[in-house]
Length: 563
Image (cartoon, rainbow, N blue to C red; front, side, top):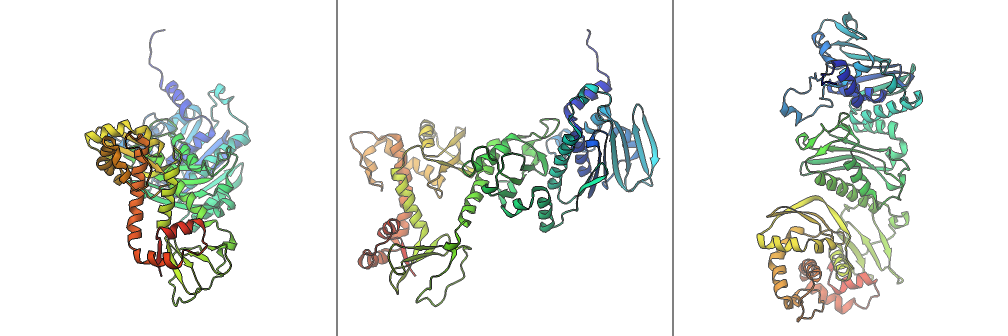
């Protein structure tokens, strides 16, 4: 057979095979058009699961009469006009294929009236195209009937009325949360399924979420709102306790676009992986916002999949943001017995209002009032005698505990993703060392990649050192690591007192461990120097007290501050 050009009808039907898979695909494309038309109210009417009729009406900007024939032509759109627009897409649709694909596999009527028009016009496309006057208010109505009437083979692959309706219902619900400011109604076989008024405030928006996800999700979820480096993540994440056996309630929107991107779904799942059992899936409604120029939505005709300019940055940002929120939820889950404030403070005339919403009461093994009362995330009260109270520096205790863990920890250490990866400039001699030691650093939970000969991007830090100043650590490499590699005997000068044979070179892993210890102990030293006088007093009068091991260690380190 000789090469020949396909007719417009065949070409449109081939394109429709990619865009229009089932009635739910028609609804998706028409809803995108209505949202792009700045509609405030959209009404969907279905007959027989959308197999017989799909009718969508809106109050958007409408289509001019002379543009109606173009509306069902392939590659005709009002969304973009130049190649630059293609790389900065803010509309839901842009390909100019939706109405042409729908018209090629069904019978379609388009009624529309812009605000500047005196009356509405209707396009009727069955075998031919006919344009006639009609009556309607401002906006547009698309009436699609007999889907796949001219492609019987494809019609055989459609599901039952019930299955096709549920697929459409899912699409409409996803759009309802994508555009909460737009009113939506869905009617099936003359029965109103739901009507959602436009959500103009947080209360009505939550009512819409409750209508779709259920009351339990709204009660057992927490809001998230984090922004960094031009990326913003907001929405609601469900507690691990309400995870499901199905993955159908993990909804993610990219710049308010409904997407089912594998990278984004994987990021959410990774954040929850230590919180839920295998085979369970989290519930969430998340909105990811970033510059349209750094994401390509022109990857697949359905626009469900996207391509990011820096996918690792997006993935790590989501993982870190959700992980931090889940960790904060754990702090709120204190037993009611621990929230009972039964401790009466003595010799304190005034106590400023705490900024910490929860209080914790821990009884020591002794009789009497050997108690710590946590005031906020930094300090806690400790009663040593009936008349003496001290303020515990929790941050210093944490540093001491982290140093103790790090000193004896087995490798590899558990890594914690940074909320935003840290970029660091390196010199040529340092680059050679970092390239050689990349796997060793990875065993300490520090992962980095080279973006050039003078730049690295640090992605993770050890989970036991959440406050690690990663830039300071890599700065110290030029001062300490190079010298340590050339003269390992100097290593005994670093705090930590790890016994080393000066006649043998240290393993690189020991050197890096000592660098981390050095930085941790530097923080401890600056804290303890401020309390030398108090340390002397505590050593004389309070070391006999039978405190817990942690407090006793903290006491010996001089980690108390007098009230």
